[in-house]
Amino acid sequence: MSDALLDAALAARAQAFAPFSKFRVGAALEDADGRIHTGCNVENATYGLTVCAERVAVLKAISEGARKFRRIAVAADTDVLTPPCGACRQILWEFCGDVEIVLVNPRGKTESYRLKELFPRPFDASFI
Ligand code: THU
Image 1: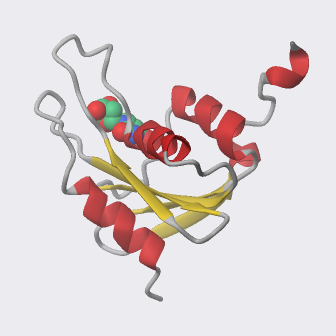
Image 2 (image 1 turned 30 degrees about the vertical axis):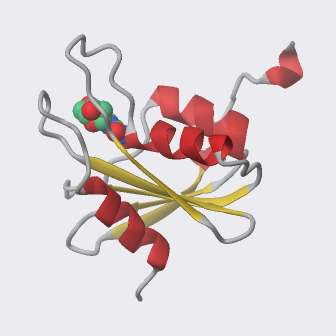
């Protein structure tokens, strides 16, 4: 089945700036109005300042005024599909809630999760 969100994540992956790891990731976040916000990983010579594709997509969307989200697709070239890292799970929880996460690779393999499955006991503003 063709899905514009998965296609957008795969296309965003082509823009990855990953000269250090060579591990290219793309993300595409669908907001409540159906708009798609894309991101790719952007690495840094310090390594630690690298930003993952998912966080780039979320921060771009927030900076464009989007506040409610339906799904995020994450694309990487692995056979065991690549899930969001812990830092991205935290950011996704705070900005997108229990969003659907669709993992995809260039050969069309996909898997779907809710964020709560991957991040079951989140810390957030409700504790503060
Ligand atoms: N990376 C992402 O962009 N998203 C993920 O879900 C996993 C990891 C990036 C960070 C770094 O540029 C490279 O992949 C290797 O860790």
